[in-house]
Length: 175
Image 1 (cartoon, one colour):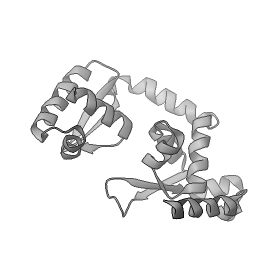
Image 2: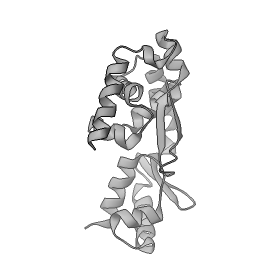
Image 3: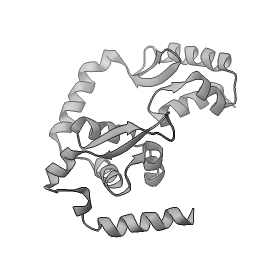
């Protein structure tokens, strides 16, 4: 197993900061080995479009600051545009299944949802809160701005909301 490859995959999929200890546990390595691999990755990314940033014991993939102007232009254009199909899909999942973790959203969609969630957070359509069951993750829920945008007084006024919530409860009972 290539430790750097595993670390890179975990950081890419997770989309949020990950501690060295958690990376070591996931990758089956020792913290010192993981830290050394992270340093090597940081050096390899130095001239690339993504960089590896460190904040204490947490590490995360991010865009290269040298590309700031292009990234800002992309972000501005996305807010001027309508929501993408992926954004609408994530928004629907949060509306009908929320509060829900990003990993659960990813599981339902079959792809990484961190970019769509970030976009929805910045637009004020979803909010995130600390997950009391797992302090390493967040739960996402519909924001008041979403309700205002759709002209709804409450989330329960969404089409088929009660039926879908009932199905969710039945699914949870089976597990």
